[in-house]
Image 1 (cartoon, rainbow, N blue to C red):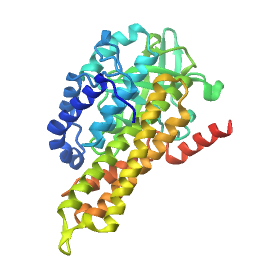
Image 2: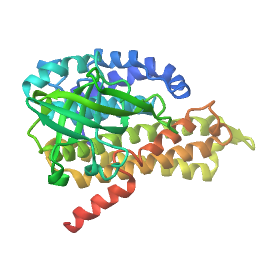
Image 3: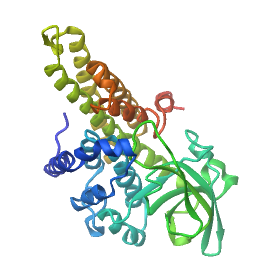
Image 4: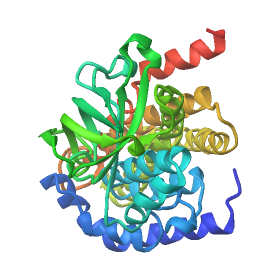
Length: 379
């Protein structure tokens, strides 16, 4: 197993303690009421978790992707939805700003994102462009020193709560897939609005929204990088997203196993704990084995994304395998708890619902298999 640095061990322990003490009592409400715990995010800011990827000069902690992934894992053990919103903020939005923005842009937006005063979002998906992300139709037209953006985005995590958004748009449709640019957009700008907030099966409490941009005027100074050079930034962001999202799957699978073990030890049938029955033992052993394998793969992917620019194949493999492990673990936990597992008296049914998203978001399992196969075949 990969050895963590002293700083990584400290932040993991700090987040674990905060999650157990402050988040665990809220987890049921977050899911039941589809409620976003904004105050808890401010507490994450206080311990340096929201700006873990940002340099210290901008109010961050100066950590790396593995540090962020460890935070996601610890949060997911308690609440998958909070882990998801955290990842969208700290890895997707803040991560993109740290990688690709100018010093002036970083100084303008990072301090508030690091404290939790502002929440971030990463807006790529559109109503007609999900897995086919480059089929986006949102357009930015140059007008002097400004751009005018028109279009819409959908399934945007944190969309209804975010103040600072990293948005991908077409700036030159004639270049087709290559005519993509990236902009920093403030949610207070005229013409920007939040449409429908999506009701989801799981990950409730992590706000998912449609966004509308009707003549939103942004300065050329809000463009991230060069015009029509957004595809490479997008692909790098997707690699990092997939590698770190796998840690949410790890956290969910860990929680499923922990609840299953506790129940198997205390629940008695036919005069003995159900953990003594071989069928239950098989499920527990399978959960542990798959979780351990997923952890090794996910840690390797996170490390690779720190040190290498192209980690697509390994990131997709980690995301694919860990998400399917989490889904199986969630359903196995429901089965082990039996009738109680199917009720909201125990959190395993929530874990099972939350885990399913991990096979869909950031590219479905089918898309991950396509990415892996194409790289293997050199296509």
